Length: 488
Image (cartoon, rainbow, N blue to C red; front, side):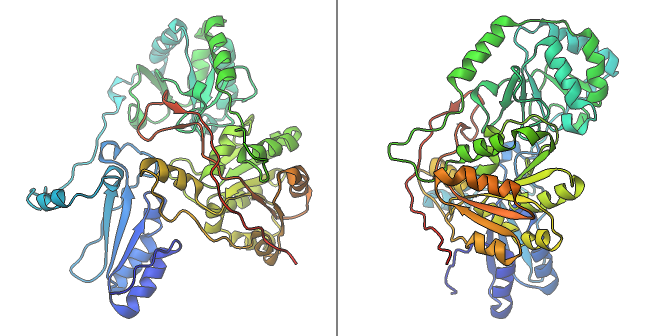
């Protein structure tokens, strides 16, 4: 039997290479969502060439399948009498279960159903009537609410006048505004009514309950949260109908409570017992925001997937629509750099910065060649902690401290960038962060700033499957060793 080799990389192509000369079936383990979609081409290759291969992929838990949950994707299995690829989807709750020999034996006596019924939901489309008729009921609910809160999502950006109308509604009716990850920038986060981002990694004072859903797509209504009432239509139309009917409120008591929560649960930088040498992720985003404050209106941040994406969402103060581009629902690693190049081509008068982690950037780092070849001046702020830090944290929490394959051996990012024709620097110490950030933002052409960061948990966070009001706040540093690159 061939030895087991845990390899993180283009695993499908590697397994195809391993399988074709040996004729032994290759076994591939991939994550849900983008991990599954990325195996389509190699599986087709295996299917057409008759290469035996088993692909085991992650999948959303059965209770939320069919809801468009994070990284859920419907990929049919390919099974044939001829040797070829087979896909086995393992739901998250099954993957977390503890192996039991007795239970495995008993399972062989359980009848197997002919098919697995998918989770279904009942959209509330049958409640939808003319938008003008619905507006009366929606406005009545809002006007009667003592402490209403708006949760703004990506649809606000999609509507031409969405951000401006959202601001008018918030100010006229004195309604605080929280945003989803993809809704960041739809409401000015420096406004007193801003609650910032809500969700798993959201601020404690933003995690709230929705009552009224305004959506352009009737099929999504009631899919995840069953609203008390709804209005279907383009926000540019819906909000213009609601605005004249909204009653002005000062909501002094509710706003005072929110200001108290903001002060009590503000996103703080953790205190360290020992002198700090490396930069904290929060400090990097704070420094970046400080240096580009006067040009935020013509700055676009893209983000790869992982902790830097969430740090950027939390720590950068988003003020302008469409100023953040990231992979939200699918969570596709490697997203940041290619989309930064595309963003600059679409907005050549904007400063485009990719905020990325080392693991995510390594997925598409070859695009530095594209930026260099076509002289596309994208800037990369690289958070270098030599691991997939979000995976490390989630594994430690969900699997009782057991961690599997999150660490990685990184290239010399500075020399790699320079070898592609881009500029590169490394920021190894916290006290050099301001000058290095200034260099990155002002140098000509594409450039990468490799920042060595402290190993720190991502907080605040809501536990997997927990309610949004159950937030973990404590921040802690993890001990680790970092090797500094030598440039001679």
